[in-house]
Each structure stands twice: as structure tokens, then as C-alpha cells.
Length: 257
Length: 254
Image (cartoon, rainbow over all chains, first blue to last red; front, side, top):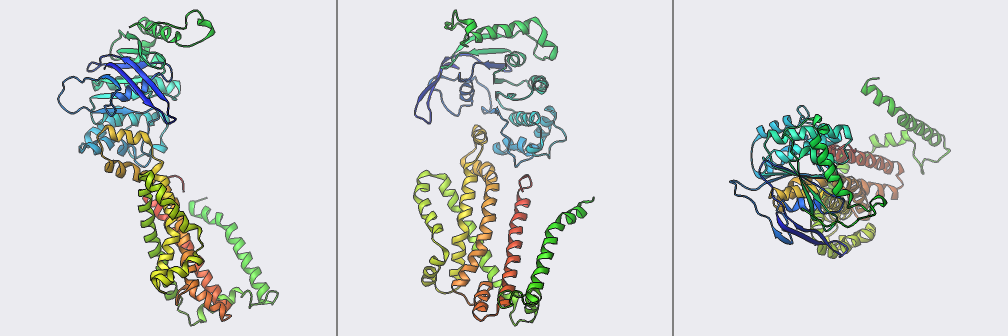
């Protein structure tokens, strides 16, 4: 992504500049986390990566790779088809792409830990399980990139940590390339190789944090120095964006990369 | 308590009330507290059913045919219009006023116009049933088509799905619950519509029987027709509900 900018018009007729001069590279098998305050354009940035809408400024370049560019998208609220069973929901991308590959569906159901629930309907599942279905659906067709928009927002802390660990294992097992957006700083550091910290609107990158931890992680990683310091760096950068009385001295900080 | 036994036990208040009503009715009419030329007694009604020269089965079939054909065509029309109206805002603005106009005019006022235009025949009666039954289907289906999860549509687009695939896999199944809401109302409307059409002009059917037997003061006959009609309405409504359960096994609503 090079010098990406995005401006759009809202329903009320206002012009919103969501992103300004965002640049970064995403390597294969890399997991990229994006954190930032609400409204900073994180979701817009994520959606630009699907290729459905072009940026207003800047370019997106994709490396040479054989095969079609496909994304797998996980939404903030799962967005499952309530008239389809777990199995049918996960199979949906394959249907659209015209692939008949029942094996993939079974494999990915096992990987997310939902074996035995194939015939259940979304309304019969807990929130955490619905998230797993959404993730499975995003991976079944072996996409080039996995994109996740706050995949665990609203999930309770305990379930969330389990889901994060499972997701990390899943991504590494499949050697997937992934980008996700989150409000949760710990989550960003836990899952990512690199974390982009974004500013308020118009969103731009104020810091890139490299997380020097092994690729496959378990819960013990959360107490390691590298983990804690990465979180601290991010927190510090984000603190300066919040107008609180405690940080009265400098509310304006020039973006540095 | 086992399932069936409990279902029967739950029905006792309903049935009990019904039995009491029938008994009171029988007593008041049999002993002349309420005259039989106003309200025939239940035994009178039952014996009229068996003794009358009327072929109840074939008369019922006449009305049933009007209801079912009108309902089927009205549903098809309603779904078709809903697609058009949901697709394009312009079409919506242009068509909706006319659609609404057909509903605010009372059927008894429209009926003579239809009969004069299309003839005093079954076709006209079916047209009248269509008129009353298509509207709830339009509203229900349109609501269902609009009320779609935008994320699901987005997901389909990222996979390169064309509009038809999106419609078939997402919009259509999504609209079923709302569509069935419309269908249930439409079915009861169709039943009323058939009777009203027969009231205005007909030579057979339950509505015909009701009006003619009233003019000849055969009150009991008209009551039999009314009861058959009520039973018919219940069965038809139940059929729609059953169809909704079959076509939407995932729906916990009804």
C-alpha cells in the first residue's frame, strides 16, 4: 500500500477524509495488526485491501503470485446466514467460486474446533462459536489474504483469550497471510508480527511496531518482556491521541514512523 | 407428562369454553329464550346439514377454488411487484401509489366494476380475490428483500458473485420469514375476498348460499355455510403455517 488516501461522502452530504498518506508493505505469511482510536479509518483501510473499492489517492500493488487474488473476510459481528447450517455457511465461498471440495470444509471445521456442530444453525450457537464459524468461512477457500475487522469485539475476556490462541495456531498452521483490525492492544501484539498504530481521523500511521516473538504463541507469552514492552510502546503512542487532563502538556504530537 | 398428553391437557380450557358455549346456546334456543328464526340451535344446524338438499361438498369446492387460484395468482403478482419495488426507487415511487389505491377502495365498490368489465363469471371473482390477496405479499416480500445483512452481500462481492447469485443465495432466503408474514395475512384476505365476491354476484359457492338462504329465511342453512367457511379458513391458514415450517426449518419464530 503506497500513500493511500480515501475520501468519501456520507449520507448527510458531508465529505469525510478517512485516510491520509498511509503506506506499508505486507509480506507473505505475515500477520499485520492495526490498532487505533475509533473512527480513525482502520475498517476503511481493511476494506480497501479487498479491492472492491479503489483508494482516492495512492496505489495498491500486489506481488506476483500465481492464481487469483482472493480474500477471506471476517466481520465484526460474524454475519452468518441464519438459514444455513454451520456446514452450509462455511461452504458458501466454495459454492460461489464453483469449487466442489467437501474435504476443505471438513478440514477447516476441525481446525476451528467445531467438529460435531455441522448441522447446527447459528441461532443455536454461542457467540464464540459463531466467531469460529465466521473464521472458518473466511479460510475455507484458501484465500490469498485473511482480513478481519475486530473479529473478537464484544466477546468476553476468557473466551477471547482462548479464541486468540486458537486463531494464532490456525493462522500459523495454514501459513496464512493476515491483516486484522482491533481496539485491543494486547490482542494486536499477541497475534501479530507487525502492528500499525494509527492516528485519529484522517487516519495515518504514527508508528510501526515489530513484535519479536516466536510465530506460534501460547498464553505464557503475555508476560514476556518483549510482549509487555511492545504493548507499552503502542499504549504510549495512543495515549497522546486521547485528550485527557492527565496529558495536558502535549496533545499535539507530530507523526513519526 | 408425555408430550401428547400435555398437548391435550393444554387444550382443555379452550375446548371446555367451547363446550359451555354450545350448551348455553342449545338451551337458550331450544327453549325459545332466543327465537330460532334469529339464532338456530346447534342441533337444528346439524340436522339441517344432513337433511338439506344442498350438496355441501361441491359448493365448498367452488369457493375453495376461487380462494386457492386467487391466492396463488395474487402471491405471484405480489412477489413480482415486490422485486420491482425493492430494486428501483423510481419504480417504487411510481407504482406504490397505484398499489395503495387498490387497497383503500372497498371491495364491494370495486366488485361491480370488475363484473361489468370482465363479465359475471368466475374470472371476475378470482380477480377480486387477487386484488385483496396480493398486497400483504408485496409488503411482506419487499420488507424481506430490503432487510438484508449488508455484510453478507459484501462477502459475496469479495468473492466475485454477480447480482443473480447474490439474490438467489442471500436476498431470497433472507426474505422468506417476512414473505410468509405476508402470506398468512393474504390467505385470510383471500378467503374474505372470495365470499365478498360471491355476495355481490354469484350462482354457486358458500357466499352464494349465505345470501340466498338469508333471503329465503332459511337461517339454519346460512349458519351451516358460515361454519363450513370458518373451518375452511382455519385449515387454509394452518396450511400456510405448515408450509412455512417446512420451508424454513431454521426459523424459531413460529
